[in-house]
Image (cartoon, rainbow, N blue to C red; front, side, top):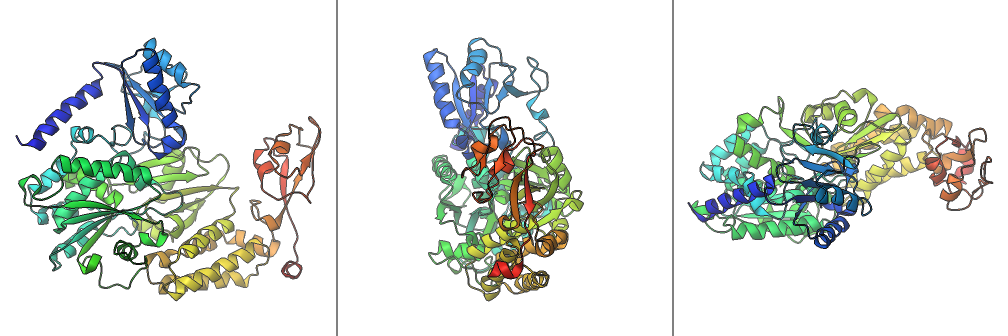
Length: 627
């Protein structure tokens, strides 16, 4: 038995002690970025103070994100021989009540508990995995997230961590590529290109040096899948890098990650240090003859550096700008050497495939779209968070069964981030796979899903996303640099009530031209939000142009707010919310709104519980407006 095997055996024994909790209670706190933003660190301090003051022997374990961001911060408690009970939205005020009941009295606080992990009822607390957001999910990539300490390599080893890599070392690189091919894994960064094809080209490419790059430059607004995985289970991604590096014959791996992810970077550094200590990095790993090292490169947050050739330029110390292809990076990439760039999720999936086999993995998903996909579910959704579902799951299942639907009327879903498309209600039964989304004019992207309801102006949304990509354009090619700017200018006119019907043709023509002529994938997909909204929400554009009306009361120049006297109860919520003092009136009497002071911030509209604030269309004469 070698040193690593002994460490694995020790790790499994340690895990059994922690998992069974046969000596002392264990307190788990979700301490990824989402949990910390909700106050997890204050809770950890409070827990430590409580157990010290009351002389309680208990272990406090920081775990990653289990997914339901709307329930953060989450605190779980497990007693010897009992299920792990989960408490949600814990505050410094409710924490002492929970700890006193559960730790000192030995009874879970049933009123504050969300549920428990197990199969039987426990103190009348429902099973946690019966939670509607979690029950329909299939967790492969996220299997450890929320269950292990991401900074403890032993916990990862105890749950069969690095077994996929050790299994790969016993096979030839060609056999490893064959397993990935049989599994049907496609790149999870957005394009969905078969992973094995890139690997095959790179392995066959001549060159003494070869590189593997993990693309963790997650720049889509509202997307946090890659960050959450790295923060919650960094070793899964790093093990995937070992497997990919071995398969393609690379000697060096680089994690390209944006500097705005400090916790993810910190946990990567800790994990890499432990890998070296355990003999999983360096020369002649485990006596296999395979040598591999991993370094971290922090990016400055440029959206365009998510494009692989721009990313390579950034690592080389150049300005991050795409270059023409061919040659493709698999032939000539970093410093002119054969290079493979894989997404965080692609790499995080590999250990599961190698450990369990291609046949096992291919049971998930659908023909041509095998496996699962992680998504960040955000926007006007009841249950925002991180999810993982089988490819082929419909948008309806994701939005309404997992996400709980919207509070108001559903309007659209944006898939694929700023380069994706806005799909209307008619696409709710569309299966989420690469080809189906592409046929609707959208893309899978890295996995951002933004939900919109009736309070969303679709024209304003299209302008927002295009304005984002226009500002993030590297400016190298004319179609993207100039075309997107013109499109933003047209959309800006429309939202200000200055548009005309010819603008819609101009938008479509410009969009089609950019898609055909832009240099890189980011430029080619930039018009998608505009083109899809023109296709599926054309009437809303025409309302802005012909009626000069914004039905969602978002476009400020097209609306004027007023108080509906018959509905106003005089509760004064709007008075307190108004930042300019535009609303006035005594309590319990209908209020007044001074339009000359109103800045149209929507604060009164959003806070009113009685629908007593209305946004009326303003009739604008285009000539007067332009003057």
